[in-house]
Image: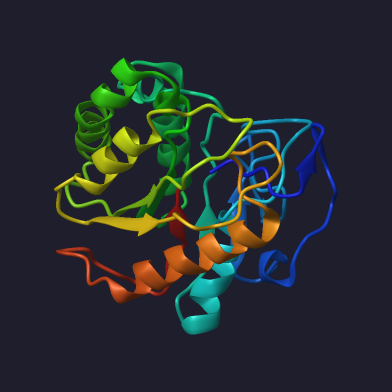
Length: 241
């Protein structure tokens, strides 16, 4: 979810597509200091990276939601990604998991409602056969634990099923991670397949335009799905992690 669209040689080109432009009235971002501000690209700046942040799917997702449903309400984006981490890092008790939980609880203090968790992850686990094979069980545990810790047993989770990389990236076991993501059979877990989206010169991160496409795909999947037992209130801030 950190996003590397437009990043070349560890530097972002600064180009922000129309689909990722700020919406001062309706899209907010929780900063690393847990203060709300108008959301803007790079969405994960300060939270996940300082120098090589680029375009991810988050802003395109939020803008697409509001374009299709102008009465959706104010969207509060809560970036929590940590680039390069394997699924083991997201188990309860590890720093990325604990930070996600803490940032989410801060966001809820302002009276918002969690509407979903956006999950785009798994490249690191595709490099090793053992970690790839363990992905499914650990990811299921992550979902179960975060739902329990947030007292949200049916928290919607939108999972991006990994695209296929190209050289020079060496992810020989991406097919195992993809299958693990496809095979998750829990309520309110929605899969969005990124296969076929364009990757950049590093062979793994999506291009800016592909990130926009992915954000639109995620928004479409979110709005089409009737989640089980999830209450909505248009007067609240909706948090997307």
